[in-house]
Length: 168
Image (cartoon, rainbow, N blue to C red; front, side):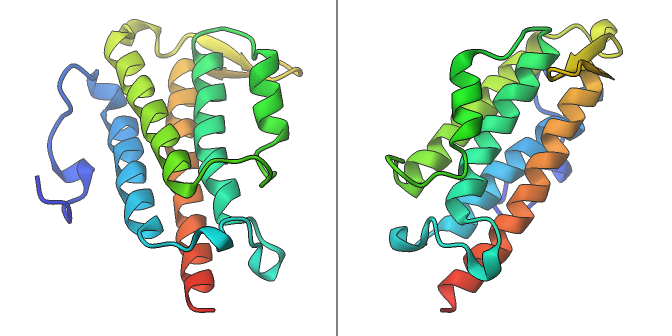
């Protein structure tokens, strides 16, 4: 597959249920675009917040964190103390790895999501799930779709922030 061809035009991902193909494609596209947009991004600008908007570092950490949390809810599990700590520190640029490490963390989390997709029975996709302390109702497929579209949203925001900071 050409690196310019979007994943949704590349055919089905083996062993991923048909109903989860769009989410899988969107997550893979997110990884590809993050790598492309962050290429040659200056590390000293990773936590800059142009126009008081979220930093590139935040977007990179958040992509991994939100995907991790949504997968946890899809598996009908509660968030761990470690996940709450990660959430608390997503906007924090202290003691953080490089942008390349953050990208690699996101790529690994997407790989984990795809492995989960491959093992989920399609008959469970409409099963009810609950989000957060308020136990807001959703479904397994709702969580997985949101994980994909939320990732794409942050990739778009990351692109704008990267382009602004590279032009400074």
